[in-house]
Image (tube, rainbow, N blue to C red; front, side):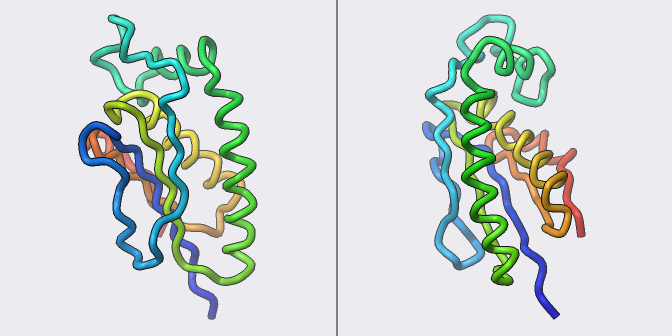
Length: 143
């Protein structure tokens, strides 16, 4: 019997703890730098919000290069996920980093979770917001 592919998605802060360690023993995965996307955290009304808030999400979708960035992310991830599934791999880690781990990386991780769950339902997907632990309570994990 083939084991299930487990995909761990992390949002993190480059300034705080840095790139998350891969605990699977496989040594890494993807690291996407979201700092090239305009930071909603520099706008007063979004400072106390996160990428989980609709205002931040609308800002990222409508006033930044996020849609273009995310299209590229989906293309790259699809290549590896399809390959990993066909070869029976068990682990893949995907990391999104930004300055504080609050806005851009959180939203990128959420969008990636939604994309993978829709396109690859046979994979188990877990999400970890390393700087936003309160968001982890609403994580979507399939078992």
